[in-house]
Figure 1 (cartoon, helix red, strand yellow):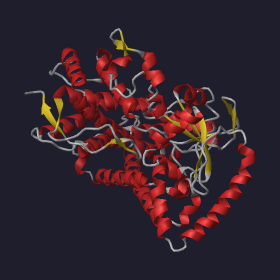
Figure 2 (cartoon, helix red, strand yellow; figure 1 turned 120 degrees about the vertical axis):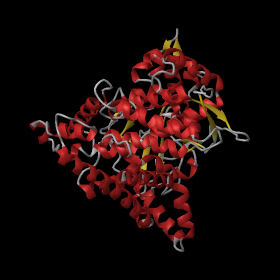
Figure 3 (cartoon, helix red, strand yellow; figure 1 turned 45 degrees about the vertical axis):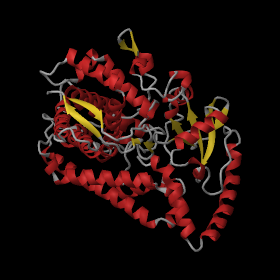
Figure 4 (tube, helix red, strand yellow; figure 1 turned 30 degrees about the horizontal axis):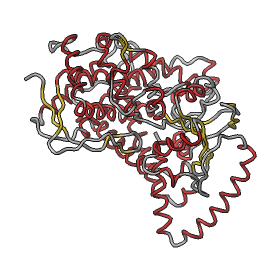
Length: 514
């Protein structure tokens, strides 16, 4: 959640420093402090992988630009699949390529399962007494929390026994209706796509609502998520340069306001659920977590796991569950416009196996290999979270001949796994057929798309996200066709931020019922 904003820190930091009367003296002082601290650390990092030289105080941040993935790709060509850079106050190791990333996160699961001790996460912990699962320290406590959260999510998300598909279909129909109301005029799909994606995760967490847009708590949550995304995209320097908290007090206060609003939404819903909870009627993920928290074993309680701690995972779902799905859908619409031959094959397969007499179900994915291959290609091509959430080493570890000390900041360059010519041949081409073998999904190829991460910190909501993407894409494509708007120039250039979003674009949607 917080990590992607790191890359936007430099312009904000530089502008503030230039405008400051005492900027030069402050830079001079910080340079002396930085050099001293780096010398103190040097003995611990002698065998770190090689990497480019950085600047005092800010490290490599000034060189990464608006799209750090491109710069990291250049470094990879020069230094290999493992190299080091300085992220503000932190030495960092960057992992590139499927082989190295899997070797680290799967082959050394425990060693690379940590999280950096970010300043803002510590602040949240002080505010509420707990932190969510995403940024919790790795250990027995985290393992128990993860297991309970995963069991609760799976119990509710089993498509045979719960209303998840009904929620997704309801919002898919809302999106299709919105598209139809545009009367085949050019329009920007971003706002409504974000709303329906946010609505799905909200209802999965807090219960199905037919008139959700009239729910005051939901409206507050949607606005708060937008505020958080805008904040993260603008950068939060204190996480990688903690001393900047004295320079950016206003931004820090704004961050805390956003977090407080999120906690208010969660508290309102948890109070309502506590008052109406019925173990015989599990309505949503919050109920499932309440049930799980009542079944904590004595051993788990001994690890410090409480019902309050179990429920902190709701914040993780709210923070990540809407933006990633909404962004992926935007990429899917763009690709349908720019690849009409792919769109035609998707329509043909859906028409043949489902037709128009019923809505798709998640079970249909087994009969729609080209649709599934297209979704995989959208995930591969877009790499929605190209640098993932930062990891940290939990102990000293050896990787490819390098000694990486405990508590080292680790960046996982997922984009490198999806754009490697040695793996994909033509990574810049949008070609779903690369995932098919004899008319079926090639599982070995599909497993190479690691958009949801690898190892212990793999995305907890992966299963629900996959259900959402399939159901949304399949139902929208069943009923709509996408076309370019006159005069619109389409590009795959992305805006780097919390997620990699396509640049704003307009399109024309036509109903397939005509």
